[in-house]
Length: 80
Image 1 (cartoon, one colour):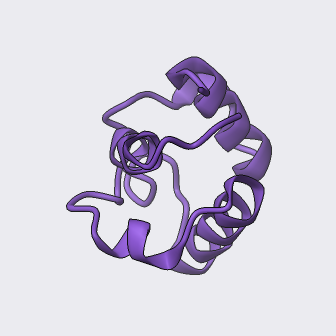
Image 2: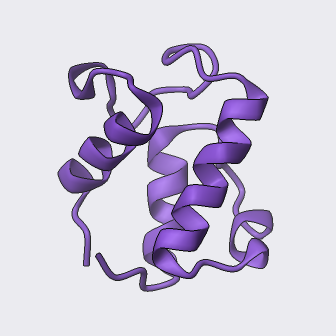
């Protein structure tokens, strides 16, 4: 399973945000400057890379923070 540090590195690659700026409580919009269109692209890329269904994102209480997205993915047993 992908650990949180690896997940942050992947997000850095997908978003071009330095990994030093990414932490569990980072808001994609407010802290990392990622707008809604970029966020859709992140969800699509993560979904394709890890075979995550849309229902996994929809059923998640908080997918606006890095930690929220990571926990949504790991709840589903996403493999790296």
